[in-house]
Length: 148
Length: 148
DNA sequence: ACAATAAGTTAGCCATGGCTAATTAAGTTA
DNA sequence: TAACTTAATTAGCCATGGCTAACTTATTGT
Image 1: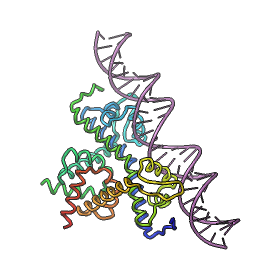
Image 2: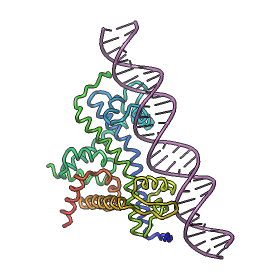
Image 3: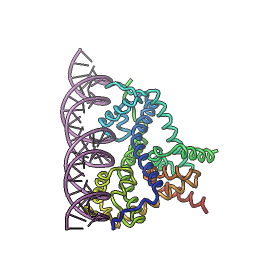
Image 4: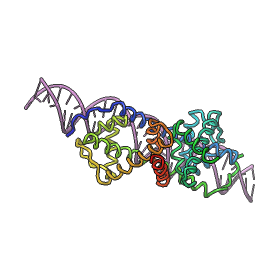
């Protein structure tokens, strides 16, 4: 037992490593994307986005939001002075728009496939961050082919 | 500005909260699932799974693996005495089997849909942890309808 | 205008999942 | 068998993203 496992498929292993790394990286951007998308939604709905609202929507405590907003600010996606309202930068707005689009594409795709709309919404929330450009295009093609 | 945002769609908000929570929960099980699946693979390929191999496949350092194995052990998915080989419990084997099946279903579905096999493999790694039972069945139906 | 309420922030805790450096155990070979 | 090499573990660090409690700032209403 414990023989020195040979390396029969180094290439495949390296690919797999890259995959796992890329999933870990995706997790890092998930929060950022969720926040930006949500902020855009809130601004659209209410004219402004408050930490309180974000906390409620995400189901987390307010200080958690404050902490995460610091990151968005660091990444220049929002403008935010203490006790003042949150604004999206151009870059933030752009990211929000593409997240929103991607989210809707995934939802519509799942629905077109036959998934119930509640489950489609639910699964899309998790799936959207892990869909590559290629797959997204396939999804889009499928959904639009189906709806027309 | 800063008017007390009314609650126009409490139900929808609660649903969204549950969605975000469930994504956070899914992230917690991701590592567990990835490890168990990988351990099963290694045992199948080499007859045993060593921390070294796991570290290599995941692209992380060995101590990281040691740490995470403690969690799998705590959750009774593996048997592992220090410096000894890793074994899956019945529960672990069961989980590994269902993860493997789900993984393959997602990959095959994406391929059937027209995604290239490399990208399908890559995206499946991220997507698989966020697919509900309902969606999985739809995927399976689509793939098997397509291949026969 | 000022007291009460609501929102936001700060400080400081916890768990997780990365890491490196140092140690210990096991396996191999001269 | 003794020395060397490889694998595994331990200790201890860092960042992230949760949390509560306490405090500060804004807003509202009398």
